[in-house]
Length: 295
Image 1 (cartoon, helix red, strand yellow):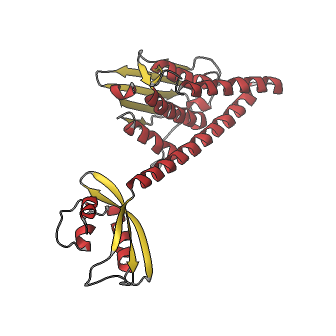
Image 2: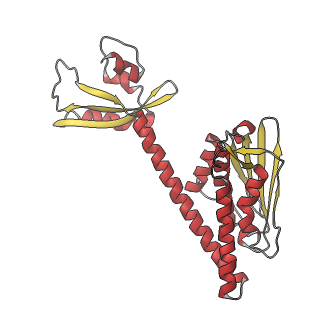
Image 3: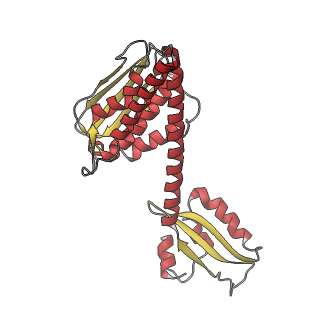
């Protein structure tokens, strides 16, 4: 193996290297698959190709191994083939898959919200004209909320104040109950950067969608309180629902939306989201790093 090969695998340069030497660096999730593929090359006639991950200290790299099977080209038990570093391509593919999944999830959420808004508006109006007017106003408010977290031309990196961001995102749901003002937002004055605002919008959107389907916002008398405390390094936002249907902790690890929220809170905001499930309604606690919030 040449020097580039040794460097790609992260192994010391020696006169010879065997499969067992390299196998220790293969990602545990891919190791059995690569072992089986390596064994299968003994009986394959013609070229073969396999992609897998290797671990070099704390870094994960993608390698594409290509060669000839059925002992073709092997001289004195030395295999002939190439290792290609395809890490960039794999990362791009993973990013595209995540983006496609996120877009699909957002579209489904918006359709769910539109359906719920239509059902609620139909119960609170008496004529089709009133229903069309109120539904249009609510959908327009929802559109304004999404516009808030879009980049502002000429003001790169700037988005909104945290309180304004949360209030505008929740405004379309505030008049869906028996009384106005059932959504209360109490947040200290602090700025939110463009990247953080996008992540927070996703989180608030997910929480509001679930509340509209299953929680306090699904009934006319339910209430929602969003409060925030800011410390030197941490910002903690508490989402508290009351007056909705009885709730209980969900089974399993949750769907794509829950995983997307957890990943966003961790990767983009350096924080976490935890849930409590008292009978009166769900309580979600969002913790994030203050410096990340400004980005």
